[in-house]
Length: 280
Image (tube, rainbow, N blue to C red):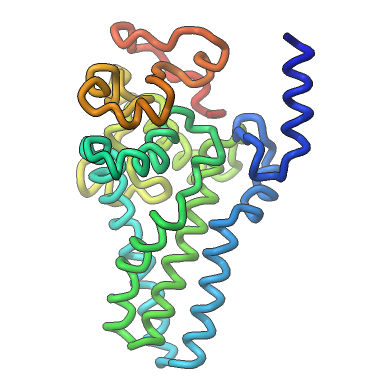
């Protein structure tokens, strides 16, 4: 068995970087930085942001209008992300529609099944670019025409890059030095390992506070039994089986316990501490 595992590891090491499996709880900060700038979505966001600069040069607006459009995108983006996270990614409706079941599985169910799996942490471009454009371009155009639209879209793209990097940090086996990053990480770890119904903001919890979804672990003494499956269990799969079919079954419990072949947590005994919350 050990020989087989060693052989499999060597075979995987020969694959191109993003054909291998990567887990943030096994990576260093340097590993993460290298992986981050190699991921096709980050390359695409930065490339599109550069094209926005070109568009701004061709169809300019005043510096003041451009700055306002860029800042407007930074204000709008956290609210749009919060609403999408709460009502789309955590909504109990996408898996009930067969054409959307695979998308929901890829963009969020898989991430909650194993929060440290790097490949499914980054959003796919066909699911991220339309919301970024819809959230930022109309506002930018209203402020400064095509030049303002380019500035606002660039703001959304760069904010997405920031979100993606900080999201990686929140799942990396790494304790940030800055207190505000530690707090941000702890809130997100609680979302993944204690109660998924709250702390939707990833890096900005202002809207969680305004909309009443902000919490700290001490505020919710019992762990959610659906924190890893988002409510998609065997009973649900019996009626809407498409995610189960795509996943090869239904997994439950802590992802590391599953990887070790142990049973997941018992939802009837769920008041204990969150495992490895600073290193998840």
